[in-house]
Length: 375
Image 1 (spheres, one colour):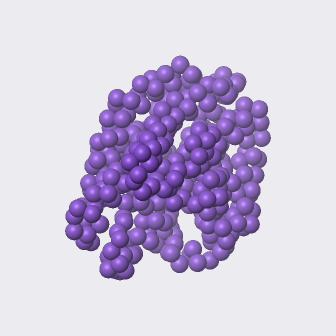
Image 2 (image 1 turned 90 degrees about the vertical axis):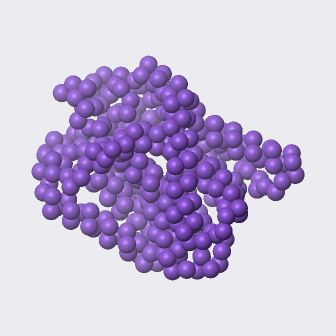
Image 3 (image 1 turned 45 degrees about the horizontal axis):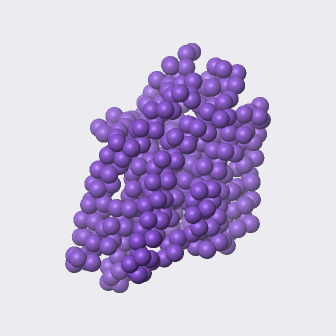
């Protein structure tokens, strides 16, 4: 099978899944209020709890999808060239991540400077080196995240960048042991979460805590790439079986506030949802009897292409709307409907223009460092 046929068969659903992942993260951040009456209302408190849960597991979905995709592409490269270009991989990742990342970082430090210059109240940002070296998640573990709201989001990019370097080393020099290494980092992550069970910052932000997400994503790619019988079973799943799996996922989500009261579930939570996300990726990509192929939803594919911008910019839009919210009467309608719609539309517009006018200028160079087209 040619590499072009691999791309055609495999990649078409992933952009839509990225956009759906962003929607989960968006809802995890978009509800905010200073009114005790609103905060204590049953509707708001319930939505707030579930949106926070949805936000964190949606970030995990990006870790799984990212690991799945880069592992697949690396295996494909090794199959067709008998080699993995370590430098080219890192250049491709940098061209995708760095331009927008450092733009957001620059905006954050410019705002801090302007606030300081005009003697306005501001929370001091972590050292610039934490952003340059992609170690912000460790600073958050040490000092918390009480600083500029949209800059906190950069922690997950730090985790991804750390994993990219680690995984590039594995794919270059240790790819013969890929299955075992993937399994090992899942075990390491579980033991880490056991040891730090009472440290919420480490559980949420430490790279070791997220290794299980990456390991399960990598294992899924290996199974899909190397085992045709596995794919045949996926293709032949009945609609009732698929529906059953989605009902299980939905049930776990509904029960999450209660399950998170149990330490054992906290330990395995990320691994469980990583398996769920892997199932969704495979079912959407390979099943012949999917209940709904999300890529068929109009605009989802394009929104997925700009999902990185959506993630980076939505924090800025939330920050702006939070500052503007004092001009309006605070009500449940504004908090739950008006503000989210305003933030969502403005984020889409900014991300679209950023992708078209800024990010695409760098992305066009990716093909020079890739033996296949980028997704």
